Length: 236
Image (cartoon, rainbow, N blue to C red; front, side, top):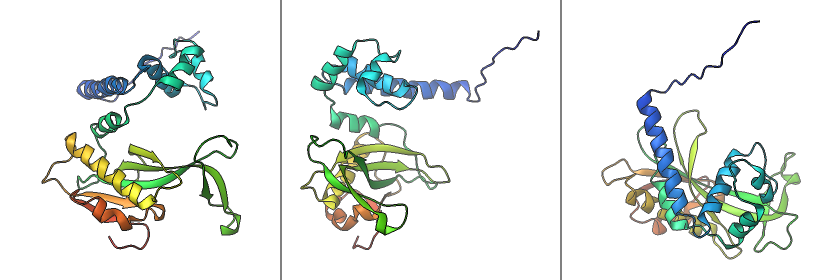
């Protein structure tokens, strides 16, 4: 009977493998430092979430993943009493290697994405989220949920790869344009402080969708050396 042997082939040079491993290792250490308190358990939950074999429908399911070594009691305690140092986490993300455009510029994109929660009547500050229908505008719906504003770094070419840098949940009293403008400014400041952009580099570019009209951006982002392109009409 013929014998078969599995062989792992890696196309990356040894130096590149070491560099990628070092970046991932530093990120894990920095991420752990952002989880306070209950950091050990929160970190294991992150590992379990990434290593789960499919969709996670309930937090307790993560306690069954091999990467989670504690019991379900520790999981609930971490979710109830743990916290994340969000400003520090934003800087950690800004310090990672960034995707870039073909000419070397940093390109930031802003968009609104909805987390629909129609079956969660006790959840606070839900809004009616506009969901486009598949059969024309007549089939559009407004479904209760939470809208989130995302900022991501993009790269050129056919790839859809992007790197998320920030996410903010929009509340009932928030103005979308003002929130996203301040959000972009904060991300740019983090990129500068973490050494991902220096004065003299190509000017960063920021684009938005119609949901994030840039009408309030120039004043809120003054001094950020950004070029704006919007998905709708507006004075930029």
